[in-house]
Image (cartoon, rainbow, N blue to C red):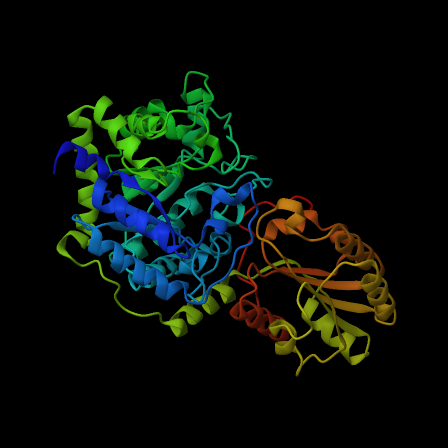
Length: 532
């Protein structure tokens, strides 16, 4: 390859699976003309970070998986050098593609006792197999972020929790699972995105910690990953003034953070990839096309993820970079391609989904992660209430036919109610219906995993819950992000609280079994919840 062709390898433009033929042909042109090194797949333009301005509705396509496989084959045929196909699949291919296996969020895995950390390995392994079935050999996961800020708008449920040692162990296990089946992994977002309150898709988060504080906490999982030969590390779009002469420069564009801290001080010589360069924390910094790509490369990134100016970026790097630096990045990338086996021609989709094995794994995680937060012999009390015919079941944000209630119905029958919308009339009607009951078993299916707008739990529902807790004997099961507990009022008035983490069938069935058997809950909260 010429020097220019080698530089082309550093560019990983975004591909949208459900895009127009015209856009797909443009990607083919980039592959042929610029010898780009890989691609990063997203579901559609509406699902990517570029959609924050327009808020386009994501249109689902049941054929996305088949289309993804077709695109992988089509793009590889265009390439002189085999492409390294990448995707964000933190909780499985389902993060980007419909009708594919989904695994629990990292926060759910973080609730597992330490002796079950092998389940994080199994999630990594099964995810890797699913990716290979689509022809993808590079998973931009897992997070190594220690989530020690309950108001973090973007990390939260994607982190294994706030215990740095547990985050480190679980991240390494997940990586080991990926590598076991020939898929590359990536620790992100260096030097740590957990203690931030700004979404880096929209603005620049600033970490106020000193290097000593970072070494004690945020950097611990990355150091553990480096010790275990992690394939790649993604640099986060966040500023750490203490590491950058007091400047609020994004880590993605900081030599001090990449070259000095990560390379020299921490001794990492593996592949470094930028976070998506279309994100607003960096994308609007430079007017000249190609300058952002050069600045990111110059700071120490080997791969430019979601690069939007391929032609201009290649020329900027060719003009400014030394041949030695270009060779160093090129060699790191080729080493990873070799490890994934794609340079030997092993890049076609292989294998098929095993939904049964995925379900068994999810059930195991559900059984070991469910967390009893408050317990006054909840199970025995509910049976006693049933015998006195004073028990009702209430489902929030799912109808009365949810799997949790159906699984309870034979052994613990009682009238069932649901509140799916928070209009005044529905709440008044429900309040009146519940008056005759003393004890209420409540299942709250948290609408959203992200904390924006109180996880989409409406204010009227929160007020209704707080009032219900004060008037009735309530046992609450929360299916979803445990941080949602922080927005629910008057929790101290409840009789019992159980945290279930996901609303998958396996988690609902597991919760029902636990309640009916009054069995011990092995899980523990992976994050500190204020007010609980």
